[in-house]
Image (cartoon, rainbow, N blue to C red; front, side):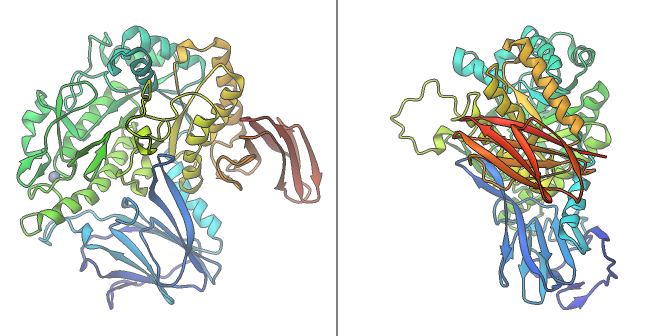
Length: 590
Ligand SMILES: [Zn+2]
């Protein structure tokens, strides 16, 4: 291992061994930090920070890297040579703007830190670097699986519900404020229905609190305080989760008053306060400052109260445009944890963006130790998904489809009601959009990300939603209390059956593109005893899917229209109607 031309460490590699470390001292930024000798295979990258506005999601990119190419990662793999190699880093990236870059050369893969990483010109200050993960072994598939298992072990296959769809649909279809749905009667009815449907985690979205920053319970909307609502959830077999935006504090909040020096600043001026979902103006607070301690103590407070999950929203580490409004959202303070007087304001702002994703990783780890899981909303671009956060947290990856504003529709066209998201309605299309979360999970772990599917009493729509949810991170929303009780029972039975198969963990792959007829996904349990085949269609079609089986392996097959053995293959047959969805269970018999 080399830093520039100087060897700083040597490692004796053993096949299958994994090394994870953090860099404790800065090198010369922009230089090669170290180089790993090539082993004669082909290199490829798996990226996570590319955003597609048409589907409105980050999607994984997995492709070959030629010699001379560079990659932001976060994962680079070399396979097919003497030894397979997997290198990954923690830090976040939006497309190419990564603090860690890989350079693919004929004889080496060089790992470099870009100048963006440097938080301090003053070397005496401590700095927490991104972690780097190295693994060498004979089979790249095993290296990748072991890598993903580290992320999986901190996550439970629990069904999530979130109240936001109900609040939004009230707003768009009945003209009510978003916060009107956050009422005692509505939330108790949703909780009751969620319990019947087998939901494990019930998340109250915006409006349960009096003001951002302080995050005290709103007794007027939800009487009885947090204690009562944790109890209401627990008596129904649910855990309670809460929405919060940790990067804002209301103008009237005590939190802002006490932590004025941790406001985000630009050119010496605090960033302007803005309205957060119909509540009073809130000031942006810098998470790459001592403000992280405020958030830590709030997480502790929630943990003590019995809250099991926090949904972090509104986290943009860079300037961004949302709903047609441009917002400055990077901090260039010289007194926070992202640069000092020796740095330029521009470098401090860039450093803020990089420190921000490390801060989120740290908060996710801290929360996990207290038994609180963190979901981070990255349903817009400029949010920098990263592996560090995924170690303990999860991404709320995709909302109700693309924005009308991203579809090039002329402004003169009237959309009524304007639901903002183009795919705001239950149906096969909504599920198709949400399955991009399955694509993400197939590369970064089965429970890495989720999108909420919309439940419905229509059997075909429900079949699409449930099969999609099993692939796309197990999250549901809708107006549950208005569904037929028989639908809620069917939801529970479906998830119980999939859970029983063991295929909510393990590996996932799709040999087809999302939207194809048929579209096929195959999930395999960690013990490899069960496989579940998920099939979807847009046009009616006949499916003949060949699945490899071990020599002499026998299977029980449930849910197909026909099946047969053909040598070392199991052939599954299905007849799909238009916009259909099917789930087929393949259980290996002893
Ligand atoms: Zn700052």
